[in-house]
Length: 129
Image (cartoon, rainbow, N blue to C red):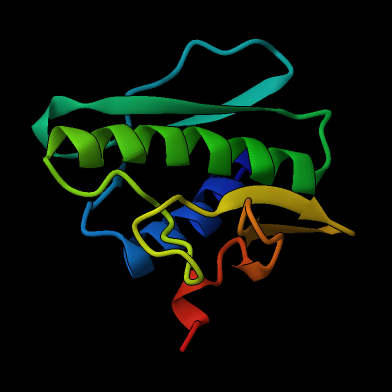
């Protein structure tokens, strides 16, 4: 597993646990620079996105990049489907705004952009009660 697969798999775990949209890894190759690794994801309806990370970044930085790209794309898909365009849902303010990916020490977390409360580490939304 390369570094892009590793960070994307954590975000996909959160998508699978908390979104009605099913995403899958698409084997179509990406055109990448020597210092990049990437994964193409696809969803129903022929839509896809490339998640590209720089190999010189820290694991935390790569994870935050993957979370931001996937979150933006998933929100677009939800809106196109006529669903609430909020993912991941903020437990403090449901259907108001999504959680934000952020750094916290050496971790990458989902937090409420209003209160700053930490909802979960990225990759563990499915572990919430």
